[in-house]
Image 1 (cartoon, rainbow, N blue to C red):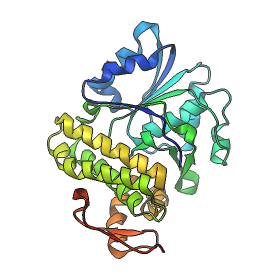
Image 2: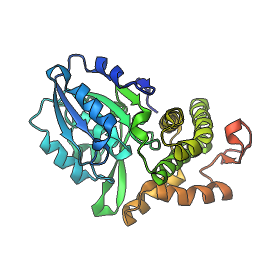
Image 3: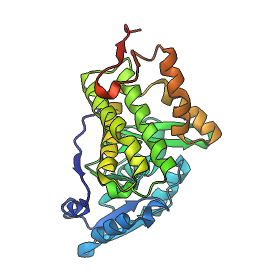
Image 4: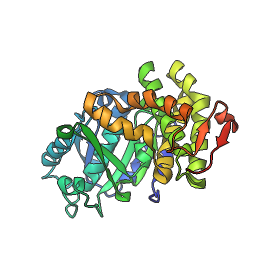
Length: 310
């Protein structure tokens, strides 16, 4: 568990609120992918970042399933820059890479290879994370997940230093998601919330985050998929995803994610698809990794049945 000290900015038309966060920063690194970089909202953010003569270096080729080789290549690309702040805009993969780069751009940090071997980073440059999907909650977790293709699996680098200084929940960034992406990323958030609520090490803090997130998700996921320009529903889904990340930070996921990482690495399947395949069977059948079964009605505060700790 890591203490979350991030300042959260949220709301529609809140992009101008990013300006004060940039005070005193001259060399910025913007991390995103080839789809997100084309969004109108991202164009507005890029214009704001470049104001007052700030230098903005753009990385817009983060792959959907980044591996350690990808991150190593990016580190070499920015090695000669004196990066003062990293801004990540995208889904979980982009945000994870942005978190790692915020550490690796600091001259006193260990190498990526050292961190993969277990060395913990102690410092980073300033970091702003802006999710463009409502699913991973990466902006609220101290984790960064990388594929290790040689081993056909994924691994996580975990440190409270990876938590950002600022998080911006801007619903305009999520309105262009196709329905199948909006729904599947929402299921990703649902998996996080259910796993954390049922984890044997769940606690009052993680329960509170999980229940708030579940309530927001169950009330808004259909509207956010069927009405892509409904900014209120999109914002509520961003908050649901964020609360999923908070719950992960305090309780952690369990068997569903434990299975999705090796299988996702082996068959190049998106982790949320693996999670969807496992979560129903896991909770329906009961598992020693679960302290509760989740039943319909959770969003209204009912339907939970406690089990003895096992």
